[in-house]
Structure formats: C-alpha cells, structure tokens
Length: 159
Picture 1: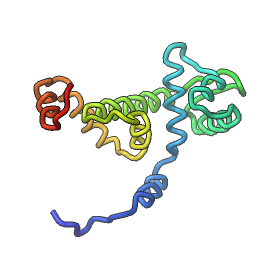
Picture 2 (picture 1 turned 90 degrees about the vertical axis):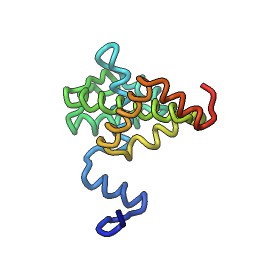
Picture 3 (picture 1 turned 180 degrees about the vertical axis):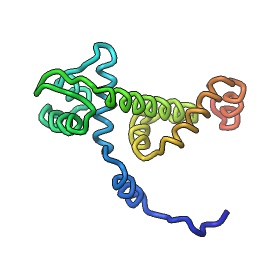
Picture 4 (picture 1 turned 120 degrees about the horizontal axis):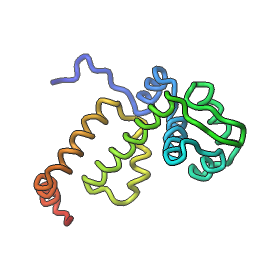
C-alpha cells in the first residue's frame, strides 16, 4: 500500500486534530455517559450522585453540567436534578454502547488487568466507523463460540 499521501501525526497531534472538529471533549463525554447511565432507571439523576459516581467534587460536576446544558445535552437545577435532552439521550446511548463494546472486545481478546482503565483510555480516541467494525467482530465472536474457542486455543488461554 505504501505511505505516500498519508499524513502521519503523533498521538497528541491526532488528539488536537480531533478536538478541532469535535465540539465535545473527552471529559464531557465521560460526564454525559455517566449521566446517561445514572438516568436510565429514573429518567434523571442528581448532581451529588453524578459527582460520587465519577469521583469528583460537586463544584467540578456542576461546572461540567453547566457546559453540557449550554451545548443542549441536558437541563439541570443547580445542585439538583439533571435531565437529558433528546440530543443528550441519543449521544449518551451511543457513548454507553461504545464503552460496552470496547469492554466486551478487550475481554474477548483476554485483557483482564485494568479492563475498565483500558476501555476508558481507548474510547475517546476511536472513530464511530472503527467502533462499528469492532461491534461486528464482537457479535460474530459471541455468536460463533467455536471461533472464539479456536482463538483462545491459538492464544493458549483457558476459557
């Protein structure tokens, strides 16, 4: 294939390029994903619950929630109830599915130590197209246990 015409960057360079075209930051995504998780049962969450779930101070959570509200992802009352907008629910659902897909994929390939940390590190820097392909691979492996077992045998893993 060759490398002609391809534009290589450092990891930081790709991060900067991504931020130039993406309005929501990785940190905002973490908050939105957690708000979506917490709001699934009751349709809303509270500022204190969000801060606790993300291990941050309430004032930090409040600042980020304010930013997300300004971007149209949610509505909130200061130190009160947080409700996702239609846009927020849709994006939160995608973020949770992306997270779960990566976690399942890493589990399938044998990552055990720091599974959550590895998922968190990867999820913000992967394109929707790549997630879609990983999702297909995960579904294929889970639907075809003989292929999955062959992979484990190839790795000399016991499952």
